[in-house]
Image 1: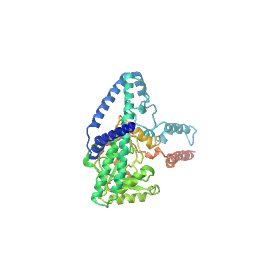
Image 2: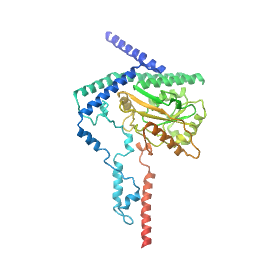
Image 3: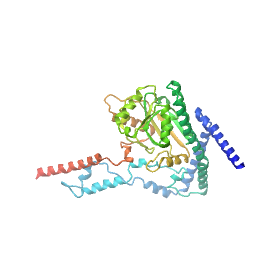
Image 4: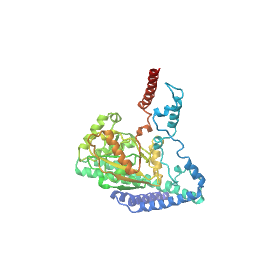
Length: 438
């Protein structure tokens, strides 16, 4: 009995500390300064570790690493120019060299595929998963790393798992209860309160530190908020500062339970798998939503997949065909404290969340941009590109024209056929010229 009583007291003390120091401040959106103190200590520690690494790494290895960057230089000239020096008339066997060269360039990691792997760090941040290029420096640095492992896995991880469990449980229970109320301004207020409180608790579960900029441009009701996409927690990052109506596919399991509870309290837009393929149905439901100026702004990630915090890839035009006002938002994470990018082809959701909860912290900046509307004579694709450019500039991200769907899908046959047609035109063109000269 004594052992059981001791465990009970420890559990009671633990929950009391969590409730008093984290949950209640989160509910009211205030901070007791604990997170700020933790971040200051963490920054000083990482700065010290960086200096130790710089002193311990020989200059020869630094030069060697810097020289290994950019070995491959791709020729971006068109096919006609690339083949002009290799072929004479009609088909030439030497044409195969050109296509072989292009094939080898495609095999090597290019500007598209490297956006689907974790962002490279300038210096080691004392996380095992990012120390591939580092080696033993000193006993002192090793001891600090061991201490960090103990803190992250024995202190922070249990605390974060507890907070995540409480936040998700309160979200399901709270939205279910609020959903029983009749539609009214009170229901809407309670729904927003539950969403904000639970999302703030979940962000605390990641030791999240978020800096919001230009709050005067926050998305308004009846509008559409579009943002670059790095991680599933992008939703938490934005919902901590304001409520949104989510758009997405219906899931099963725990995610399905959360979705069914949330939609009772707030008009989120969930689609069945078969409905997602019907673009006209999706557009119709979204237009109906934004037509009601009392409903929350819709949150959409037009890239359709997670990109590694360095770039913004092609925005799907569907979000920009709906009409209404677009509120762009740029999100940029600081990779020094933790890698927020979700490589879904490498890690499942559980593994990803474990990596997040064993990181030092999640630190990011969020910029609200001035609202944008579709200009006269501008089609949906041009409008999407204009919004994407604004987000990329503000977030300091590289703007790429490629479809993020290349992460999972094979290259479309239309792209291959286009190259085949270009080559065929060259052959036919040379043949006709030669026949006329003969």
